Image 1 (spheres, rainbow, N blue to C red):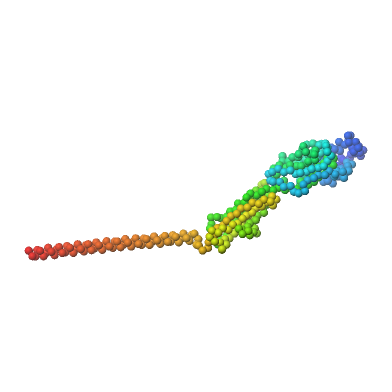
Image 2 (image 1 turned 90 degrees about the vertical axis):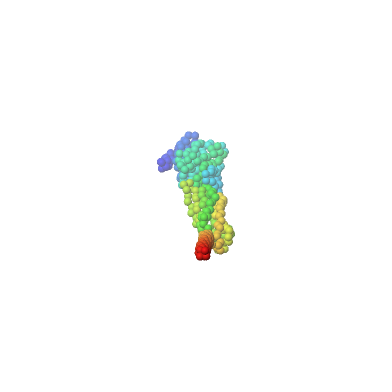
Length: 357
């Protein structure tokens, strides 16, 4: 198709070309139709091809480059999910006809069409599907030189270099950078708090945060302000939206000089380099003093003491019972002996009385 259009241009007789340039009301519409077709279907042609076509049409290439197009020189920062405006303005003759205006927005690296305006209306048939129903120009401000593009519901994939191309009899273009950022959630710092640590024992601290872009900067420090980041590991995982979830792990040990109820504090900081925003979380670890035995030993000793006490009490009770039984047996024997003695005495007394009488 492009070859056909180029040969068609070259095949136009020279007298028609001259008439088209000198008498625009007669045959110039022929050239306009060809130009519009090229711009509509080949809007991403290199400037050298456009210049070649301009020369073929008898236009002065230096004049075509006089249109000044202005865009921000610093990168434009957009929050994920929000709307952003890519500013683009151009200088042209006041009160120009809107039908003569063409505005093209495209990604510079992939040449994908983001938005197109020509012939007094949007031309979105060739728009990249990723931008469908998410872009618009300020149509009421085009006549004042405002060719800014609004992108709604910004995604991570929208990040890149955008080119703004404007043509009003003459043409010009400029490129800007769009950066996307999303804040990370407040980190959650956890560890196995169910275990009681003694000096010299270690535990893994885990810091988790999500929903951010680009990758975060993670820093670890202790209560004394010492940087422990080099001892930590960090892993990042992107979801289907391109947002990152991170998990950082730091292994710490209880020091020998930890006193009873003394707490070691560790802090995890997660910062977004583009937003300059920092979130942090802290946790304190209580170490068990070394001079005291562990709880399990205390329980063992307590049980042993209780058992010993029970044995002693049982022995005392048994001894008392045995003593009482012995005393009862002795009393019974004494009573029995006393009874026998009494019977013998009575028997002797009876015998004596019988003998006397």
